[in-house]
Amino acid sequence: MRRPLIAGNWKMNCLQADGRQLAQDVASYYKNQHNPAFDMLIAPPFTLLTACAQQVAGSGVLLSAQDCSPFDKGAHTGDVSPVMIKDLGAQTTILGHSERRTDHKETSAQVCEKAQAALAASLFVIICVGETLAQRENGQTLEVIAQQVQESLPQETTAENTVIAYEPVWAIGTGKTPTTAEVEEVHAFIREQIQKRFGAETADNIRILYGGSVKPSNAQELLSLPDVDGALIGGASLKAADFTAIAETVK
Image (cartoon, rainbow, N blue to C red; front, side):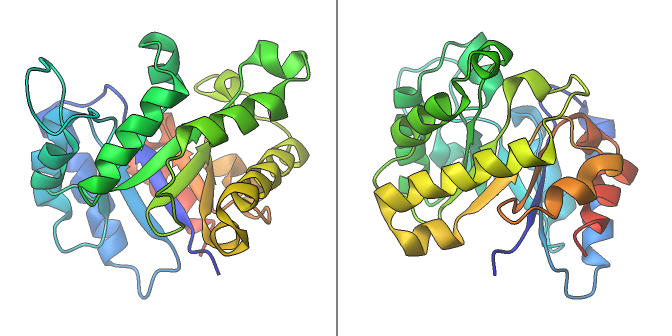
């Protein structure tokens, strides 16, 4: 059985006070669960990693960065290395989010380099893939997803060190979501691509999250799909009540 992962990507939100409170609220919720059937993770901005590490300590909540450099150290002004992220108490980092691919023109090859560096630093990685609205309307969804999966995942990928998040770009923060049939089609296709490259065991056990306007009202329907193993949640993760309500749907 693949253990569901409920992950909150805070993006560029929260200052010290509200970030600490949000992390504390999530940590309190998860700590009070009796043998939870799911993992829970928060991904605050870099400025809050230390504060959030303190708030979630001992709760079981995982801590993630939102990106990392492909380099461990050196003359890379403004970058944050996987080793630094690990040193702050995080266990993972998100890579290849559509906002990075679009706003910063990141390629899948660059995502792969970052993933290799993160894995070498003993972080596990959450690698995002997803198509634009134009690509979906042109019938290119599976072609785009296949290319991103093949080019973004390093050879070191296993079910233990990698999580994949399918985030249709046109559904992120828009309130729009694909139909459940469309979500399941892509998730099953991603699993097929993993099987072709990494084998059946990895494909059967790797977790594939759905992201894109996930909220309490649609979470149960999405998270009940056979190949959906949790959610990467944006806006709804900024309110503890909404984030935990989504988690409640996988109990």
